[in-house]
Image (cartoon, rainbow, N blue to C red; front, side, top):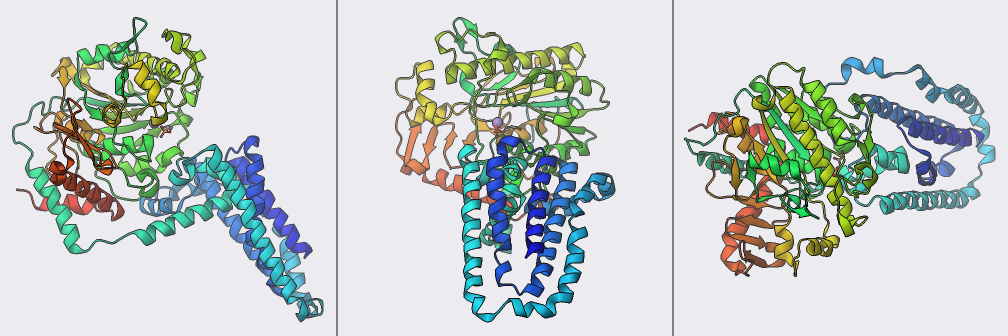
Length: 623
Ligand code: GP9
Ligand code: MN
């Protein structure tokens, strides 16, 4: 009994210590302790019904398993700055990237995790010797009591665990569905409950997966073949960026309505407005992200595949093969950098960026945090340090920069020193957003100046776009007031889900406004054309917006906007895209079927890891 209690306490302390090593803070301690107690009670619930001679042995095994779990997570954390998740294990096995340096990841202090075995192993030997006497202590009529005790432990364990998980879910809604910050979850509900939820999600997903038969696979491959056959032979802007650096900047929560807009006589985004004058500007570019937020935007742009119906691709399919923008550019001799000065494990980036083919991921650990606003390093410092780095890179590069400062809830306005006079909106949600995006715009202005100063401007293709909307639907009245919209109906609301896309070519080539509708899916094909890369054998779902007669933006729920209509299938409504007049949705049946088929194809590709197969098929079946 005493040994069991000591082991229980030892495991508890190890889990707490682990939490400390992965950066857990004291504010998370209540939820964590409750959750840990819950998890331990569940793990120990069988002890009362286990025979005495087996009990110490079982405790020892439990302790060993949990210690190994902690150690593997600790090593993983030291390498990837993140916690292990089941889909990631597949990725690690594939990439095999950790193997070389495992030894370097071990610290002498890790021995602390094994101290309790000094007591436990002798106790185990002793218990073995004494086991012949054990029968005197456990007589049969005590069985019901022991079963009851087991049930009580299990029930109490569930109540504690549930409460800890509930606390986390209350403070961070969505975190458990998307798993966007795994270390945060582990810090708040403990490693055991974290792994239990992860395993549950994984098993559920695996059970829901429907493997495709050959026929279905064939149809998907054919769909790509037919789609790619439509690529015109003569293409505009083809190769204008060949051999130049490619810089893609994904701006946090840059929503379209701020472009060209003034408040109290001041432009909200003066630098973007000026850039637009000299660039190709897609004014009908829509947000196509789903539950994966920022990570979905990154995924769309680098793979030209739709995000998942549920959850984030970055979390669920990091082990898939992707024939992505960085991989294609690498084949042309480019070095590819992903840059984002935040926790590397956030959105599983430390695993997903290598999987997408980025050579290097410059994250929080690579930047000096000399100016922090809100969530982390300020955009200005981020751009300054990124440019300091990039100016020394030889050869053409693809730099994918993801900003951070203008992140929800936009309330760090003090740092902006009233640079934008928002008047009576001061201190409101919308006013705060305008100040934040004005700051992001100023930072972009700095980036452009730096590119010019370093003599890189004419050697760079620069694409800037917003990752997703900034104003959530529950704030739609604030937006309507600001934009003087009397009736922010569904049509109006969806029309405002735009995120601007600006592509600047050397020599201001092609500058002007493009009205073709599109979204994140279309950036990769558009850029490949500009970079002079033939994409006939690249499996992409989007279209080259500079060489398509028809445009299309599709949201993950099936809402779509084409050149003529804005259609909301789930609501049974369609509108003329220009006037907003209702349009009979029955007339769009074929189009709707097509869109759902496309979404389904993309989903199946991801679930069945089909990109490589499609790519090979396209290579072998060139016209
Ligand atoms: C943090 C940032 C936030 O790394 O990308 O993601 P979001 O919350 O916008 O999805
Ligand atoms: Mn975002």
